[in-house]
Length: 153
Image (cartoon, rainbow, N blue to C red; front, side, top):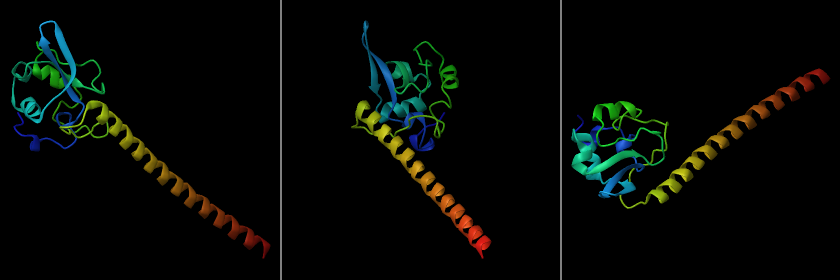
């Protein structure tokens, strides 16, 4: 089992701000969308029975990337890791809404920041496409001018 956060990829669920838990406050009251501390995240990597140890009811993705694969207390950890794409420890690449965990940031602010960063990436891609299209248009225009000039002389 992985022992340290430095042993997992930079873009994985255990490092993501959107990894949250459901905690039992009282026997009849559960609090959803509770952020996990760095210590709790470390326990997810080192403990065989992390839910009971951390007194969590479920661990899940705030942005619902995992769909319905929440992890209830009585489930087996191995089964849980197999149900979540890549588990908590593997690089998620560009397949989700990854945002690095920041201790003092709320989930709502993190969601807005992630949206802004996604918009920025999309705008950058769009600018690149406009530049490429402009270069192609200029090249085609130069070829047409050359062909017409050659035909007229």
